[in-house]
Image 1 (tube, rainbow, N blue to C red):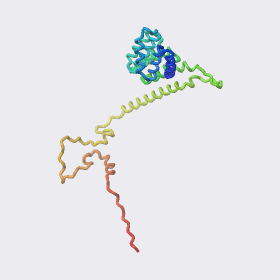
Image 2: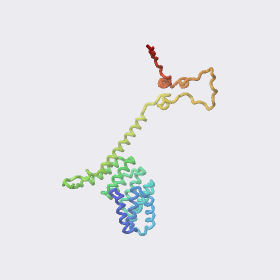
Image 3: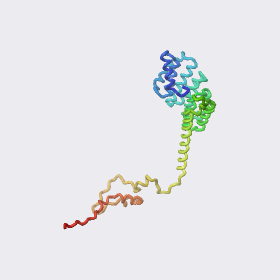
Image 4: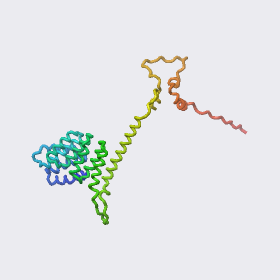
Length: 282
């Protein structure tokens, strides 16, 4: 789970359940993995409800993990205050419950609270080698508008994993961070979204600083419409045969700038064909 691979975690928990169908740690692990995958959330909610009803059978560690899973369920339902309350209950039972710290940080980020960055720092301090807390935390902080905090969280991940060196099959040494695709993809996504957000803000600022239009000056959509007064609901009498109907140019004099295009599209009839003399029979 800490590696961000809930599907693999589900396989291990299901194997444990096949040996002991009432294995409580596997039950809460399955519920948490399903919430992280956003799959079969209703089954996860039923499991949490069942385990909370058996609170007397739970050890302090299991009780903290169950409350942390309940906090993740509240985060899934966007009930940020309920998630914070469940996280606090988990931490009161087990102060070292890393998933409770993570769930609380997610709730604060969902509320766009300024304390979200410090909450993610507390989560990664308890689990320094858990990539999911760094990657998801950076994404959520960037979505909350705290780009600098998101980059700082990824810098903490780099500081932890950069000294690790792996040896390849041919005897070469390669840094673990150099082959960490998830890290580089997350960092690139955060910077890309931050750049897009700053571009959008600059465009909005430029549009608001535009010159003030003169009276009678409209946008393109207003120019395409006729500026003559709207007709009243009273039906006018039909024109007599002696009075000719007004043309489009007379009905809408402000449309003269478009008159050339309008007149060019009028049907003028088929083009004249020059007659050729018929040769006389010899």
